[in-house]
Every structure is written in C-alpha cells, then in structure tokens.
Image 1 (cartoon, rainbow, N blue to C red):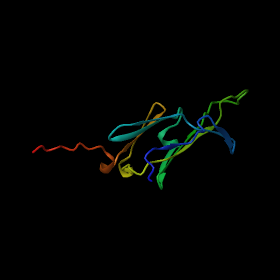
Image 2: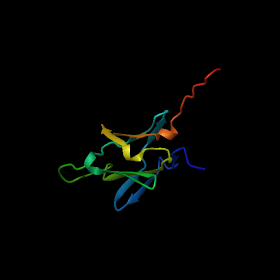
Image 3: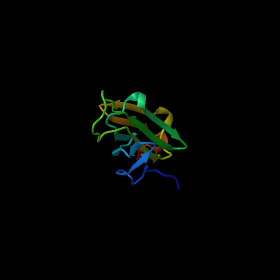
Image 4: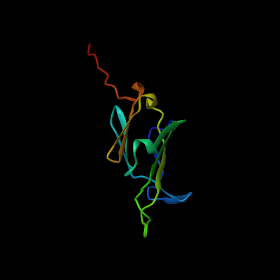
Length: 128
C-alpha cells in the first residue's frame, strides 16, 4: 500500500544543541486540494543564502541557519546562532520535479503538484 499522506514528525517543539548552535524544528502547516500539496514553514531570520532544501527518495529536508551579528562585545545574550531542521516523508503521488519554493518574510511556501493519476476524475454516464 502506497503512502498518500505526508508523514510529519511529532518533534515540532524540539530543541537540540549542535556545535554551539541551537537547532529548532520549525512550525509547519500542510494543505491539500485536488491538484496540489502545499507546505508552509515558519523560518524567521532565514535568508535564501542560508537555507537548504532537498528531496531524496521522497524525503523532504528543510534546513536554515540564522546568525545574529551585532557590533561590539556582548555583555549579555539570549539570542545566538541557531538553525532550523525538519524532515518529511512525501507521498508517491506528487510531481517532485515540478516543486516550487518561495521564501517571503521568513515564511517558506513549498508547492508540490499532484500527478495526473492522483487527481480526481469525473466520469460521464451515457444513457441509452
């Protein structure tokens, strides 16, 4: 049986330390209609240059880094270097080569078109 739903890991609030960088799982919303699967991720402070997106064997990986640099010597810091990391298993019924990605104001929107075979069809009935 093929997977038709994206698998979402239940670690949305997880924070870990990785080489002096806090790693956070970004909050994500997933929407689906007849033609598209859309994933919206909150990545505040991440720029296009500090983000990596990848799909390998139907596994989507989202990574982003945020560096807060201020002039002078810090006397006290609550904000430091941090990163975002999240993975999803994507369903088989998507046209992954037609994926679109947009980053605007710290919000990443990924659009995955569905394959023609996965879209609902209407069958006309002929009456004799």
